[in-house]
Length: 94
Image 1 (cartoon, rainbow, N blue to C red):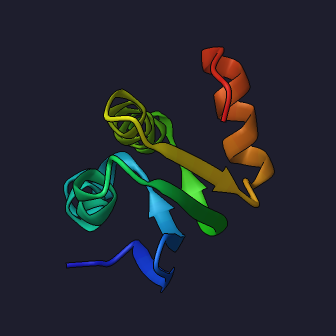
Image 2 (cartoon, rainbow, N blue to C red):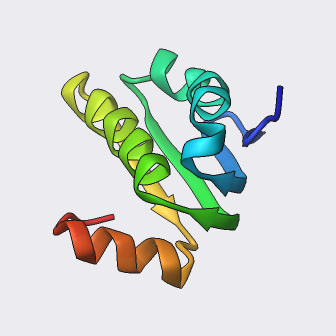
């Protein structure tokens, strides 16, 4: 299984790879630590994302909304231009 998420600190992660429909199931499994720590304030560095499509963005938004609903915060940093454009296209903030 491809890993997309790597832990860099107690509450910091790096996200990398191709976040696309072709990798959706592996991406969901890789993001599980974020789901389990939903009550915390977490930071995710997105600089390593090579490609993202609507499916990848949708998965990130589901996880972000889960964290928010459980009193936590998911901060996405170093968001690539393509990812920022997708956020703008769907009308949501990163």
